[in-house]
Image (tube, rainbow, N blue to C red; front, side, top):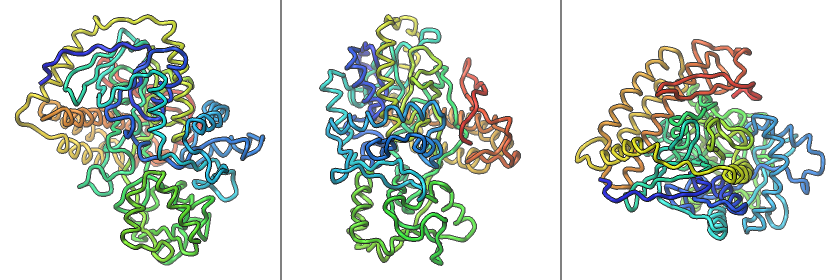
Length: 554
């Protein structure tokens, strides 16, 4: 039960999420004189998908690529994974990415390999390479220290669970301190959602292990759900993403492997390489991310990552970058098991579905609500780490400028809702019996897989919404949290249910098949629907709006 008096925290800029996007925004806003608070439900030193590191930074580097930007622009726009979906964002990325590379290098994040710029992986053999290797294992530590040195306030283990509004303006948020079990009321002039990707919405490759998934298991779409409830537009939710890698050891990093993907007969799965290539990798898994699942369904598999013919130096090069991608557990297991990668193929598999879309925002990271911004993987219009860093830095500038011309609104108008939300939190902490967050999460995953996964049609989607509404209502009535930690997990599952409803709503509205969105009752792509689909909530009900032209098919 919440018995302690709520703390009130005021700041010009509130960043919800302490990943690279949130921390970069905080650092920049503080440099421009804004008071800044970063709230993270974990600890910014080791929270989110960036905590294990990263080994690829998609960038235009004039010292490596030369001065002709045109082929780099084309490569970014057409990248099969981690690419940019809109020419406006491509131009922003081209203009700023190398500036961010140099900034990180100056802060102590190694952006060169053995003193040189090193590009490799996720590449077609005959096109420019745009994914630069960097040693990102220390990135969260460096960014956290930089934010603190600049005078930002970092509030760890604080789960933000609801945005506060004054009309169409976001004026702050409610959070829960999971260690001290108290409510925190945040009042802010500018608020940014930067809560990362969505995991645990669909079952993983090993459903019995909820956290054996390729991205951070506690990135659960919180920003998307809060934004949706506040009236922000979400877009691209109907397009599911897939990950791939060593089967049953679900981790990201397939672009770091340098071998050839082969059928059991030894035939390469794709046409791109026939022997290990550390400079490009085998991009067939990026072009065709569902290939492992399709091969299994057609009884053509397994598919193996084959490193026969790779030199010892190239293998060590690959393992070096796998470690920086956060795959230390996998690398250690290979060593402990004595697996010789030059002799033994590694079976690959397709991991869980993932939500590719998110909170709609303009190139300056502003949403359709005043004072609310979104950045990073909250909506990955600019792929991966480079997008989070570049747009996060720019968002910090925009939020500081917005705050400079804005007055605090006060939270008096949200008094009733604050009391209502506090009551909801208290109820979950007070129950002596009820459902666990794990039970609710599994019920959600089964529903999403059966009714909103790869098999989509109007009857299935309609039934899925109906079933999900019952699951959501039951969860709200029965979820029990024995402590602050479990309360955080309960709030995550409730947010995931909200995101799940939005995903199915978007899939129903897009009556065509496009990219990873497959409708069996609409098996064709409709050129008239080459538009972005915006999902919002009005008076508690979903609303659909068609937006601007899409530049890539989902």
